[in-house]
Image 1 (cartoon, helix red, strand yellow):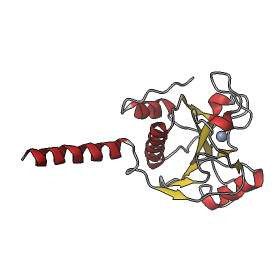
Image 2 (image 1 turned 180 degrees about the vertical axis):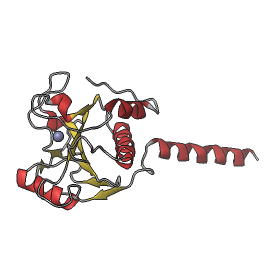
Image 3 (image 1 turned 30 degrees about the vertical axis):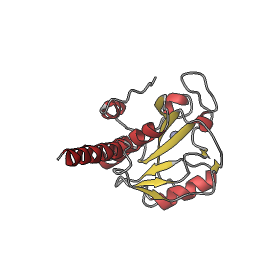
Length: 192
Ligand SMILES: [Zn+2]
């Protein structure tokens, strides 16, 4: 009887830690790109930068394939891209540097932001009638929490926070609401 109890407790512990790591909840599709990035070893990740992007070449503004063509053209990327339906694509491995932040500055004065951050793009336009979908926000929240479990994240910031004179993204995003969602589960993050 005692053995059974012990077994149950251990099983619950394993289940709990698996869920706590966030790994079972997240489905990530690998769609890695060879541009807008550089391979790296041993970098320390301290920040997550949230962006938004859309296809500017005509046709479907939310088309992921066209957005990636755009990235190739401008030699930029991001680690993750979240489509309108909430699907998460991994474009660059977290250990590698993605060219997503550009000339920017963290609250502590660090300017090599690409070197110490993970970039996440939400597919949405800058039109005032548009905004990230609920599914995107749900995926983003789960992804950020997952990253927070794997790295000592000091900042979760908008691109516009770190480059206010150049950038306005992520567009039409309810940032306060997102921060509330992030704080559920007890992980505290700093922001501007
Ligand atoms: Zn951006």
